[in-house]
Image 1: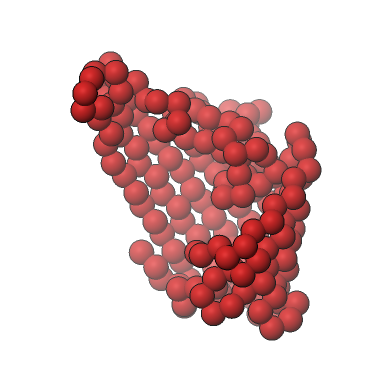
Image 2: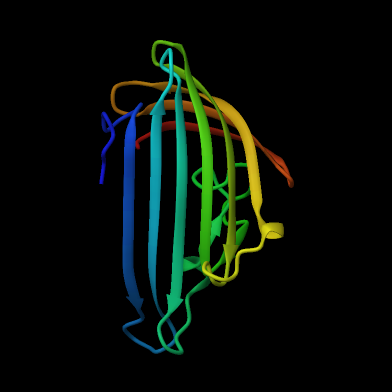
Length: 174
């Protein structure tokens, strides 16, 4: 559900995405599981075209009976889309929860700068497995060049407890 003021580059409103599905191996009994994930983003316009974006995301994976979940379908953290500052898939388990805060402000027409903080955790069970000591986080900033339909280019620098990462992207659609 998209309740933002515009579909691309929103400055106010809320966007909610819910996905789910069952995966069953048709030619054997080894793999079978279901997954559900959600992503909620709240966009809050401040003064002078500054925007705060709050995000909460989660994924729950449950095996069906005595079947297993393939490793590549387990929930993961670590990437430009989850917790910036870690390698993609650095942390994996059945369930994940993540959150972020991002402050965006215009530099010029079509160019924004931003600061962010991301945090999250993977766990075998989201409802009783969360541990404060297992929380992972990254923070940093960057710039984005926009046109009317996409991010033309972006440059992000992020720091985590493990490393400093630089991300560069071209022609990203949202």
